[in-house]
Image (tube, rainbow over all chains, first blue to last red; front, side, top):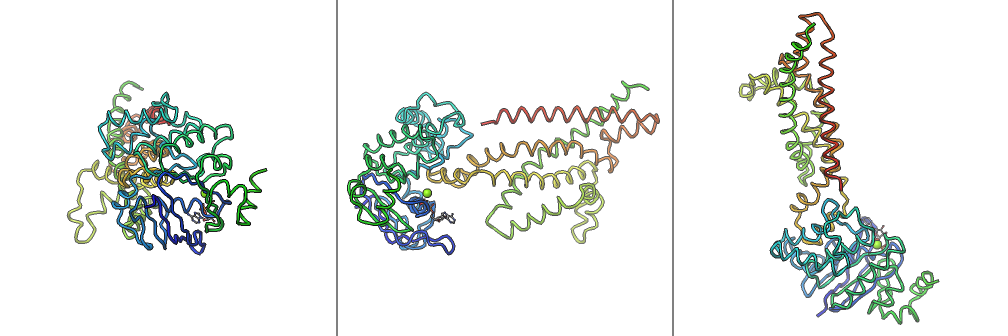
Amino acid sequence: MYEIEAKNVRKSFGSLEVLKGIDLNISKGEIVAVLGPSGSGKSTFLRSLIDLETIEEGTVKIAGEYLCKDGKYPHNKEKARILSKAGMVFQHFNLFPHMSVKKNLMCAPMLNKQGTKEEIEKLAFEMLKKVGLEDKLDVMPSTLSGGQKQRVAIARALMRDPEIILFDEPTSALDPELTGEVLNVIADLAKEGITMVIVTHEMGFAREVADRIIFMYDGVVTEDDTPEVIFNHPKNERTRAFIQSVIK
Amino acid sequence: MDLTAWILQMLTGVKLTIQLFIVTIVLSIPLGLVLTFLKMSKNTALSKVISFYILIMRGTPLLLQIFFVYFGLPFIPVVGKYLVIDDRFTAGAIAFILNYAAYFAEIFRGGILSVDKGQYEAAKVLGISDMQTRFRIVMPQMFRISLPAVANETIILLKDTALITTLGLSDLLKVTNTIVNRTTNVSAYAVAAAFYLILSYILSALFVKLEKKFDF
Ligand SMILES: Nc1ncnc2c1ncn2[C@@H]1O[C@H](COP(=O)(O)OP(=O)(O)O)[C@@H](O)[C@H]1O
Ligand SMILES: [Mg+2]
């Protein structure tokens, strides 16, 4: 059984076909980096895996259950249940600005009665510790640097003990000197058995951390291989051109 | 000219002005919020009805609406006889509430629209329900964003309360007019202006405090 299964995933925005039949299977614990030029559909695909985009055609299975079967979705409660072990980290962090760091982490578990307040509070502390920000428990997000915000967002995603985390360009909104701290946190998580799909432009990171690299171009997966093959002998012409253009 | 006597008289008017102000604020803000949600609901018929209501409330003079509620309602065919509001304060307050709710509804709608869509997405992937997202994530941010506009509207309301004079109620303006008519000394108007100014100043200061408190 795969942790994430996508079959013939198709999605259009109006007349613009963005995903043109994506097939992809990801095993439990695999770290997959998704590369490709801007506008190739990376975000749309990632968002389709967690119900932020509705696909028109195709099948998505998460941890063995159908999020979407031949373009048909179950009702909302069922979708939420199927996705209860999945999390996502966004380019722009999307922290709740009106809540302290601690409240950001505790909000969803408290609302979903994931445990007692004391348990959730303790968990929040542990998760913040994991991203190295346990001293920021009580501050507001606006006082944090971009790198710290993203680390809080990662800690928040960890609160529900996810089996899958999707990252959509987690360092693209950061100043270059702040990307390292976030990439280090992600690299540490990669060792914990969480299945991760990471859209990124950080080639060095993809090469080092990913087990596997997917290359997307114009709504299709044009290459799917180990970092070694993708970076050293890509089979596809477009992949080669892209790799060449980003590695100077 | 007996300034102390004037001020004492005017204070009775200030009391009525403040009463009308408070009743309007306390009821029009929640009503405005309800209107916002109805207007933004997926039910398009309902949304259109609310838009029409807001159009009428914002598109016609408040003074006209006050007259309509007090004098006009009983003349509506069939239901009119149940809509007689004898108490002038009640009639005036109803007009104020209905009118201001429309303004607040639009302010709140603007506030909701300016909440980043990433907030909804983050809430969704964290498993927070739509209802909880609305109340825990969107509304607090909406209030914060709306605060300056609400402050502005509130100060306009304070001055608009003077319209209630037209129903013959003894608000600050009416009391002042009576003094001027009796004494033929127009400086009473300056005293009234000072009262309005003081009240607006207190309101502004209050909102500055609120904005600081909810700054994040
Ligand atoms: N909500 C949307 N409405 C319309 N077009 C969209 C929307 N989201 C993405 N697109 C379009 O879909 C294409 C793929 O976008 P995206 O998945 O964001 O690509 P990538 O993440 O690879 O840069 C782009 O042409 C983009 O303009
Ligand atoms: Mg993208």
